[in-house]
Amino acid sequence: MSISGPSLDVTDPARELPRHSIGAAARHCGLSQDTLRWYERIGLLAHIGRDHTGKRRFSDRDLDWLTLITRLRTTGMTVADMIRYAELVRAGASTIPERLAMFRKTRADVLERIAELEQTVAVLDHKISIYEQHTLSDTVRSTDNAAS
Image (tube, rainbow, N blue to C red):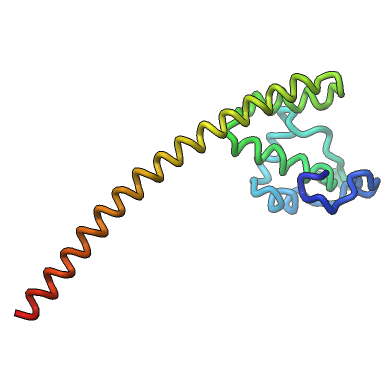
C-alpha cells in the first residue's frame, strides 16, 4: 500500500517517472523548496531525477517518500534518525528488523506524547469550565442588578 492511498498501484512503472517540479513536490508535502534541497544534500532523499535543463523532477514514488518522512518528522523523530532509516531502506530487506524496532520505538514515543497531550487537554477543560462558570455568574449578577 502506498502512503498516498490504497488505490495507487505501487507496481506501476509510471510511478518512477520524474515529472513533478520541486515547487509541486514542496506543495505536496508542505515543505519549502530549500528544505527539499537540504534533504537531498544530507541523503534523506535518494537521487532525484533532473530534466534536460538540470532542474529537479520528482516521481510519484519520491512524493510518497516525502509524505512518509514528513509524517516521521511530525512524530518527533530526529533528522539523524530519519537519515538512518533512509540508509536502512536503501540497504535492503536484511535491515527490516532494525526498521521495525525504530518504528516500534517511535510509536511508543508518539503514544506517550498523546497521553501527555490528553492530560494537558484535561487541565485546559478544567480551567475553561471554571472560567465559563465565572463568566456565567457575572452575567447573572449583571442581569439581577439591571432588574433592580
